[in-house]
Image (tube, rainbow, N blue to C red; front, top):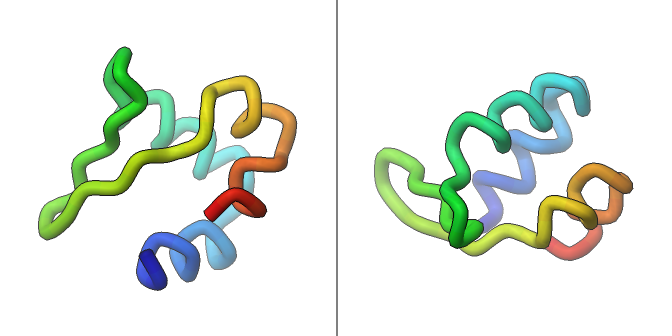
Length: 54
């Protein structure tokens, strides 16, 4: 979880959004090379509140 938070804070929001769109399936599940996390809803992410959730 800390790794994802660091990645999010170190990248432009536009890049985060594009990565999110490519990597999250319909269930909201995002798979990283070494672990899985559940992200906030797409609406939260687009509104900019997603990072606060994490």
